[in-house]
Image (tube, rainbow, N blue to C red; front, top):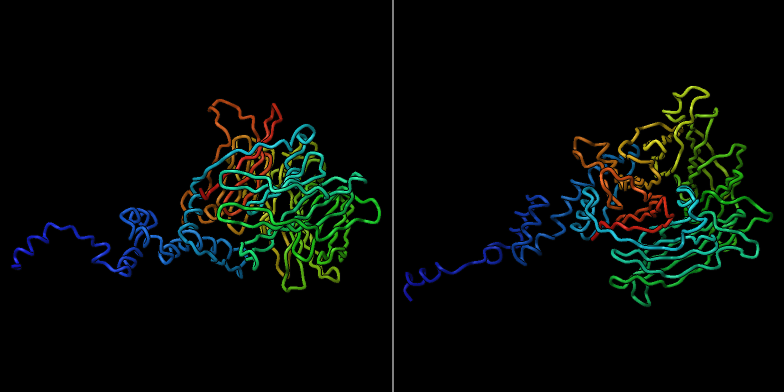
Length: 491
């Protein structure tokens, strides 16, 4: 065939330059200069570019620049030794989920429950914070009689009850559940079944000052999660009638708890019969109380942080903290610090009482308190070898109703607050680095539809979150009906 005729025939043929002319390396090298939005648009061209636009080498730098670098800068201000690990395999999914948190893009659904009815409607948000626990798709709910614990799997669009723990209290002694703490232990691959199993540790404190430790095992098969088994690994009962457990935390193999008569006790729970290693007492009543337990400088030391609120001089609110360092052999050191509420400290003696505390949460090193004045106050704990102090950082404004519940995760720089007006997601990194992250510091999610002149009746009285979801308990102020609502940021 003459060369001229061949050129004329090829002139009308379409050539897919994305596959035939450009190698994968050349396309990836070009994609490396694009933004996240441009990468998504390029992925819509064809199958080849869709595959290449999801490459981990493209999304990891985008993730680090958008999320990891600001988080490291945020953490370095209060913990210079902190290292933020990046264990992800699908960087595009992680970028998408984190971006959804910033923009408030999520799906939600309602989960009805009959657990909270009748006399349980009188439980305040601080009490509910201790009787409901959630982490990593597992929801533990205490029944209204406080004698059983229901286990639920929280999925993206549905919920499913896994089982009910019956033997969690001494029914013959009429001991009731007063506090629960759920910790995610480990995630391992089962050698026999080949399933990925998650291990949780649920600790249940009762009205007699005792506690039970349960190990819960679940397995995930594709999109379904099933219960493998539950087993009680430890039980402690005081020799004489004790006082109710009001706060508790676990850093295996140590457990620390506070009772209503202000006794602080630490136990080694590695054996079925826990061994007491520490006992401290306070003559001053504190309420509410929050405990946080973590390892200290070595594997044989633990550091407990006790946070509390109390009224002093009649009408002033004081926020106090205590740091306790101990080992398996006893107490090593203890330091205390307190601060007056910045607003109540300005009130003269005998004046109207300041706004009351509705919720208190701690995630190292930040302590957040919610108040009836529609505000949230942030404090920071400063712990060095030479000093231990608590300092006031800022006040959060924006809620139009009383703030009823809080959830805090300082590792992600994220604060969730709930009221009758809905949820607010506060990006602590955005507040800390306003010029870098522009106005990405707060997102509002409504839990119901109401008009501009309507007064919402459904209050969010309890919140907890993990990396993918927010789970909240909502209660109607008129009918006292209660239900759960789930927001998923991995739709």
